[in-house]
Structures are given as C-alpha cells and as structure tokens.
Image 1: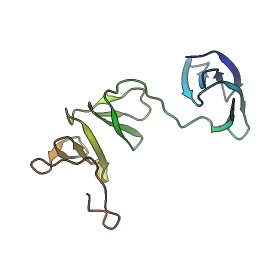
Image 2: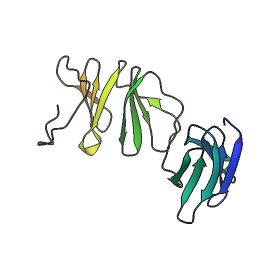
Image 3: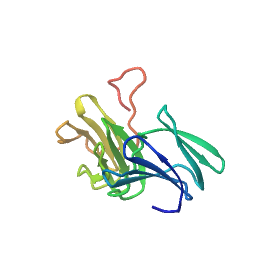
Image 4: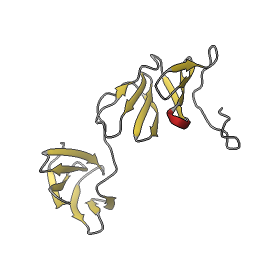
Length: 173
C-alpha cells in the first residue's frame, strides 16, 4: 500500500475501508486477513462514509465520489506482458490482446495467464455463440472452438479489428 491512512469506515461484516493520502482505498477483510487496493482519485482522500444504501462516499480534495460497495472493480496486477491494444470481457473472463500475445484472466483471478493461440501480436478477439471465438493476430485469422482447438481461416488473412455487420449478424468484417 502506498500512502498514509487518512480515514476509515466500517463496512459490512468484518470489513473496513481505509482511505490514503495517495488516492487509494484499501478494502481490508479482518476475518480473512486480506486486502484489496483500489485507486479512486489522484490525491488526498479526506473522508469515508458507508451509507445504509450500500454506497461508500469518498471525499477528496475536489469533491466526493459515491461508489457502490462492494465494488464490482477487479484489479489484476500480474501476468500481463507487452503493450495492450484491446481488452475483451466475455463470460466473466478478461482477455488482454497485446504486442506480446493473448492473455486471459479467469473470473475472480488475480493474474493473467498467457494463451498459446499465438506467438505474435494479438489484435482482436470476437466471441461467437456456444463459447467459440474468432481471433486475429499479426499473420492469421483463427476460428477457436469451445475446446480451444484452432483452425486457420484462409492462407494469410490478418485483421486488426473484427466487427459484426449491423444488418446481418452472420457477417463479420
């Protein structure tokens, strides 16, 4: 955790929200002895109030922010490499397409895992029906079936962006 503690609020159960002078909230679960850190502002957090409606009111030096708590935010800080071009969320998983390949964080995971679909730059991922995907890297367009088997489409087809037609859901550009 960076910064000094500036305020605290009791949340539900054995959970505390702690504010810092570096703009972060620490969600600390006393019974599980675990913490999550969420950046919410660029500077000093002066106060916290947990409302009966389940909102956490955060006061900073510019005003206040109301957050639904527990927050749906997820912070994943490891396992990712390269410059990220695109993020795709599908069925609770997060896919990061980068200059170093394709990475996936499973629902609730705290780290990305590299997928072996490509060793090249990953440009786009389009979820299809029944758990399949279309995937574009620097040199190929791939169909990925629900079991993860890859089938190349065409000889040397590449695309930086895959888009469904607004008029025909079966047509993809």
